[in-house]
Length: 383
Image 1 (cartoon, one colour):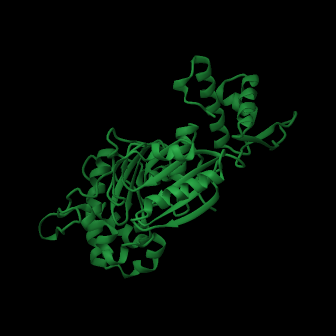
Image 2 (cartoon, rainbow, N blue to C red):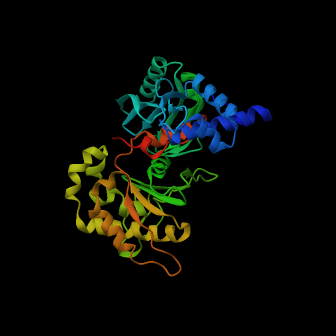
């Protein structure tokens, strides 16, 4: 596989860089790219480009496709992503359940299963399910990507209130079990990465806000995650944004926090939100109180104004279950953003793309870690 270049000497490292460049060119234009196209795009000789392609075919990362359109001479052979062998196992963890997806190199899912558990048997159920899937597809796993609610540095769960984990070396524990590299991914970061890839504008900063039972944010720059040194980017849910008589108690013990006003729990009620998936919430959103939505939009709008004035993003994307409210909520948020501070500029706000596969962001971060490549927009969208 595409070994870490830090572990190689100069010539070997250069070849690995060129292999990644060639693989990315095929990922960008699957079924269209050719050996000659790789040589032109990289400036490498035709012989070197052909050698790179041969190695990528041997390692079952790409395969030959149909003949390219004729340009007057011999028709070249197109290259495509080989989706028949390598897999990334994505485990999307939540407090009461998990989704396990085996994702092919073209972004499609080969196998998916749902796992429900109680807090008492969660850890054992997870390890058993992950172990069974890893054993079933042994030899085909490129990596395992575990998406979870909470702060992580990619190896250790630093803190997850919902899962009750603190300083848990989960990646190392799972690597012993599955025999493949394991990375840990914050759930909001994963959503943000998928949105950045699927977005129409590839350049610049993008601000992603997840609004569900809690609120978190993430920043991407040129479709790459902008992580902080302490893995705490986007922890905005308990910033105090409402004061005075309108400030409400928050579950953190404070008052006036963003979550106390703009989370789904605050706008719909804990009894409505608790334990329900986004799909289960959809028919209940019509019961949302207009006054509660207005209060939440005011608080969220204040935060967005501050963040956009500071970051100057190309757009703000609002995801999570709140996106199911559609324009009923987003129009209220946009109305709050009609005030543009002097010196700043207006920033468009849209809902997250509902076509993005649930596993896409976590799978992409695993691909970046082990292969150093990125999907094109079509590969993170369903249908």
